[in-house]
Each structure stands twice: as structure tokens, then as C-alpha cells.
Length: 354
Image 1: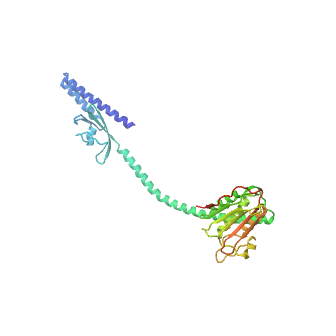
Image 2: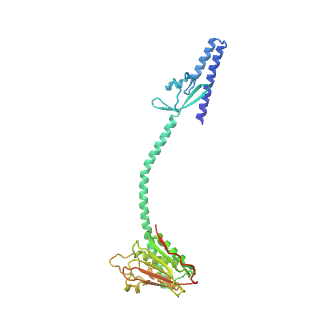
Image 3: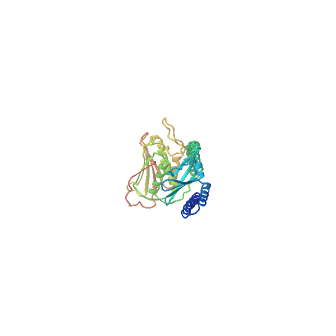
């Protein structure tokens, strides 16, 4: 804004000088002594040349009227007024913005130097480019190490969760030996319980697929946290002992004529269980021997805790397997607190993790 006002002031000065020239010409026409007229013209030339800014004026025919000393020192053309918006003059190069005003056939041009402003802008652009280049290299290294640390922290978190689960199993086993487990009983929807467990499972098991079929809906009375622990444990075992791409099936149903109990069956297509191991499967610290393959981590307490928790709710756990390599089905049988709903069975649903 300050530069614009300066330009307007200089243009005003130029207009005043032009008006003086017209006045002198008029005085000559009306008979003013020639010496006085020439003195006025000399004074006008002196004032014009003394202007510190580069400026020049041309008449309607393109003839130069005046050019300040600053204009001439720059070596700017006096033949014709400049038409381009900017002028590059001298060596080292100086950059000027051309500001022109035309009135009554007279074109007045003022040059405003912007060399320092352009150099500052160029320096800023070069600095930003340099910073962008120099900062990107360490940033890439930081990003790479950050990703590596994230993977390592994920491994640490996984191991912490495993240790936490093992400690919880040991403590739960100790509690069941000491006496009945304390339960916070409340009415629970079997369908909601199963659906929540399946959603947790697919979120924690990348690539796994769960097929659910809620044939019977019922309200039971139990501890939501403990029954969730039961389903989580059985689903986790199904994932441990079955191929990663094999779906796991979860169903709720009732046996014909037995409306007092609801069944939650979890079926996998995994390694299966030989008949001789079924009677001891729920014993503490018992693990089915592996046939040459490494055994999954654990103390062999999970299924014994599942049995104790289900029995504390007045239910039982059943297991069926046709033998090695033929998968297994674990069924949790729980007493119904309210009669089974007469609503139509839900359509089978498939849940899969991303």
C-alpha cells in the first residue's frame, strides 16, 4: 500500500510539471518576455530532473516530453514508452514494475523497483526447497524406525496378552479349587452373548471367518464376563487347532422336547481329538499330545476353567470329535431362565476379519 501511495504522489508531481509547461506556452502566446519564459522552462527542467524516482512522459505522438535523471541513469529507453508490465535493467540485473498513467494524450510512466522483494521471495523459495529436501531424509528414517518399533511393540503387546491370559488361567484355576467361583448373575440374551463373542474373535484373529446360526434365542441368568470368557476360550482353541482359512461355525439351538436348556455349539475343521483323549480333555494341565507338530502355547488350564465356569452356571460342556483330522465340536449347555422366544430364527451370518 505504501508503494502505491508513493507512485500516486510521483504521478501527481509529473502532472504538475506538465501543467507548468502548458502554462509557460500560454504565457509566450500572450506576450510574456521570452527570457522569463525560458527561465521558467529551465526551472521546470531542473525540478523534473531532480525527481529521485525513474519516470518519463510521452505525448500522444510517442515523442518524449521529459525523462528524469534517475530514468536516464538506468539506461531505460526514451524512444517509446515501455509496454511490458516489468522491466529488467542493468548488470547485475534490477527488476522494475512499470506503472503507467495516461491522460489527455500524455502517457506518464513510473518505474518502481522490486529487486529486493523478488530476491527475498526467491530466497524464501530456495530455503523451503532446501528444508524440504534436507528434512525428508531424516523424516524417512524416523518413519522407518517408527514402523519397525510399532511392529516390535505389537509383538510385545501380543506376548503381554499371552502372559496375562496365562496368569488369569492360573488364578481362576486356583479359585475353583478353593471353592465356588463368585458370579454376578443377571438376565442375558444368548444371541447377544454369541454375537459379541464372534465379533471380538474376528477382530482379534486376522483372516479368520466365523459362520453364525442363531436357531434358538433365549434368556439365561449368568455372569456376562465369565460366560464371555468361556466362549472366547473355546473360539481361541478352535483357531489354534484349525487351518487359518478354515471357517469356524457357531450355532445356538435346542434339542427337540427339551426347552429347559439352550445349546451353544462351536465347530472347527481342525486337528480333531482321538477318542482316548476325550475323557481327560477337561483335566487340569492336560494337553493332547501332538503328532510331530509343535503344540500351541499354554498350560492346559483353559478347558478345565471353561468346565468349572459352565458348571457354576448350572450347565455342562460336551465335546465331540470323529477322530484325528476330523475337527471338533464343543457344546456349552446352559439352563434357560425364561422360555425360548417364538420369533423366527435369524438367518445364518458370516463374520470375517479384514
